[in-house]
Image (cartoon, rainbow, N blue to C red):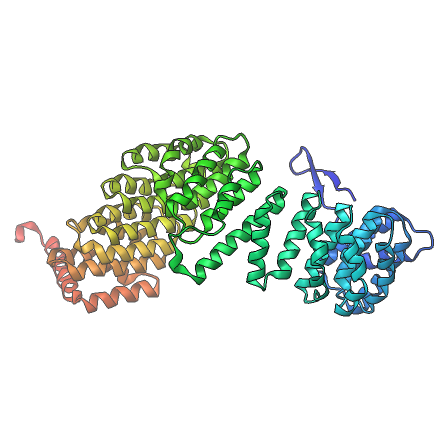
Length: 572
């Protein structure tokens, strides 16, 4: 089936591609499936009908039991076709419809016949389908065929049998599979990498409930290191799991040489990059890993940073980021190489380099690093910006002497374009800095005041206003914060205006008579606000703080001045 191509009239240029499945309906597809009953099968027509049927099923379209049974039996008639592409679709359809249709067991004769076929494609696919639809009793009937296929010379057939056996174990139908250890061990010597990998996975699935058996299996395989890269990666994962399980049983063994750790170190020198990365990843994930254990990992991954392949540089930086959280000192020798990646065309790599450098850099290099980050910070997405802000926050705690430069960077980021989560992360960072370093409160509040001047998120504005009400009155110059709060009274929505009234009341409660008089003047207009919440809050705080007397005195003074202005000057 090919995409249909139409000219895009709206854009006036190019073409718009329409999915071949657009407008597909269940009723129409079931009508098309009647072609399976034709005496002379049209392979192309049947393939298109089967493709649409599989599309509907995989998209979640529900077939009733009668519909599924009717289509299922119609599909079984396609076994008479020798067209390979059609047969592949038939096997897929049988697998998808088996759990809905009734009496699917009658198709086992066709599948058993295909297992004994000379065509390897038929044998492999028939094995997968048969293991999918049979029950535990039927598995014993086909056990002989599965055991033969495990040691088959064709890698496609052998892998299909091994994967099917894993499926049987996963679905509690694999009691007979546990007797195939000798055949599976023979498959592990297969020349094909995929067969070796599937054989090792199956062998582990059989023995995973017996920790002693797993330990013996791993030790045996470690001694015989002649494995393909895929199987070696699986073995590395098993070694990592053994080390982790042993640490959980005996946490006091931390600091002592780990069993099989030498194997992981040896894998760091493997010819395959896939094996090297898997070994490095497992070592980084070990519980209570030490700096000395991480050193060989850093040395190997440092070579990845100068590779031309993007995936190599990205994988190394991902692990360096995780190391930077727990052992930043280990990465000091590679800071120079990571700085080179700040200009990497792949933004994911450059962002990982930034966050790693922010956790490993020295105090003297902070300002230079911030200048480099500011160049392309606007080009990054919010997810990457958030990670950078979190790293800046950690750096503030680590180097208090550089806190003002770092807070200025956060303030500039706060005024840039960004989503809610990004801005929320910066506000949280300021809160954390204020809690850890009280001497920075005035600077933090100033940056937050500038932020709410042009903030489109009401929840963040109300949160900042609450902070101003809590900490603003105790600042050396509380009056400068009142101006920002008053701007919110005249420019924002009702939610923010209500929060601004509460913040002003905090200044009135903590201030002197002059401050209270200034607050009354500002709150006075909120007594006539069109929103009930704002008006009620203003009335409550005027009454609760005893500001009604000040307000009455101000009104009397205004009235007397108004009367005096009406008396002619010669009468005075």
